[in-house]
Amino acid sequence: MSASGIRKVAGYELEGDLAEGGMGVVRLARQPELDRRVVLKTLRRDLNDPAAEERFLREARAAASLHHPNVVGVYDCFTWRGGRTIAQEFVDGVDLATLLEKVGRIDPRISALLALEIARGLEEIHARGLIHRDLKPSNVLLGRGGEVKIADFGIALDPKGRALTRTGFSVGTPPYMSPEQLLGARLDFRSDLFAFGVLLYEMLCGVRPFESADPEDEALVRRIEAERYPTLRRRAPGAPRYLGAVVRVCLRGKPKRRFVSTSALRRTLEQRLGHPSPADCRCAIAGWLGASGALPAPRRRTARTRAAKPDPEPEEATARRPRRLRPGFAWALLIALAAGALVTSWIDVEAVGVQLASIARTTRAAD
Image (cartoon, rainbow, N blue to C red; front, top):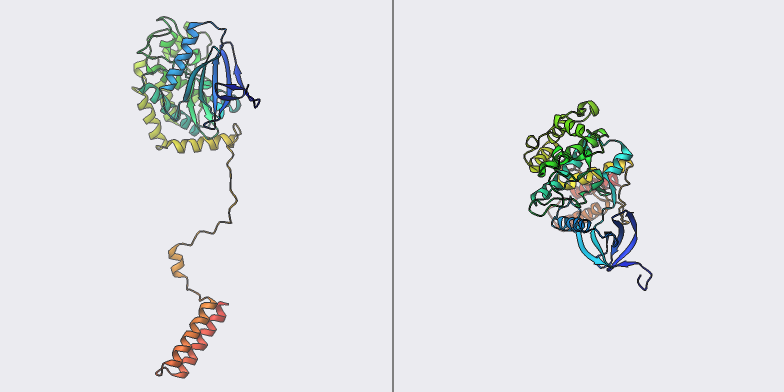
C-alpha cells in the first residue's frame, strides 16, 4: 500500500475485485500514467501447477499478438510478489452470457450485428494462425458504447507451438464444442466456426441447439454429426432466412462442409447487412442495449451552448420570396435619392416627390 493509502500492484492502483476462483483473482485497477482502467488477472502463488502457469502465459502471449478492435487487448505481463499477473483491456459493460440471462433472446438485426463483430475478431485470430477453442457467451464482452470483444485465450491453440493437450483428449466447454473437438481430434479454424454457429443460434433463440455438460457424451456427438437439432425457423420464426443458412453451415457435422474461411463468413454477414462499418455496428448495438434496459447507455458530457440558430431555408424558397427593405436601409436610400435629385439638374422635382412618397410607403409597410 502506498503512502496515500491506495493499494498498488506494480504501479497499478487497485479499485476492487471483479472475480475470484481456484486459479486466481481478477481485479479492476487504474494505470495512473495513462489515466485508464485495466483488468489485472493474477495467478495464485500457492497453485504450484506448471501446466496452469504455462496456460496462463499462453493466454498473455496469444492475446498480446493480436491488435484488433474486436479482441481484448493485453498491455503487460509481469511477476508481482511471486505471482504471475496479466494487465489487459477493461471493457465497461457486460458479457454476452449475462446479457442473454437478462433478455432471453436478442433482436435478429442486433444478433446479426453482434455476429458480424465477433466474426471480424475471429478473422483476425485465425489470420494470426490461432484457434480460440473456447468461444462462448461468457468470453464475448459488450461495452456500453457498443463494443464487441472476444476475450480469454487461456486454451487458445497455436498449431505451430507445443500443445498442452494430447490427441484423444478434449478441452473446452461442451455445449459449444465441435464434434472433432469433443473427440479430441486435430482442430483448425472451422472448430471455432462451429462454436460461432452455436452462439448465433443462442442469441436468436435464447437456447442452445445442443445441450449436454458431459464432453464424453457419445449421444451428443452423434446428434451433432447427424445435425439433429430444432431448426431456427422453428425456434425463432421471425429471424431472417439468411441467418438460418449461416447457422446451418456453421453447425455442419463435418468441418469441410462449413465455411471455407472466416473471411467468407464475415463477407456473407456484411453483404446481407448492407456493409455496415464498425462504427455503425457499435452505434446500433449501444442504442439497443440502452433501449432494452440490459445495459444503460453511456453518459455523455454536454457543454452549455447558446440556443442553436434555425437552419437556413433552401435557396429556392428564399429566391421566390420578395425581399423586404429594412427600415434603416430604406431611410438611407431615401436620403441618398433626395440628395442626388437636388444636385442633378435634369431630374424633375415632381418626379423626385413621387419617388420619395413611394419609398416612404414601402418603409411603413416594412415596419
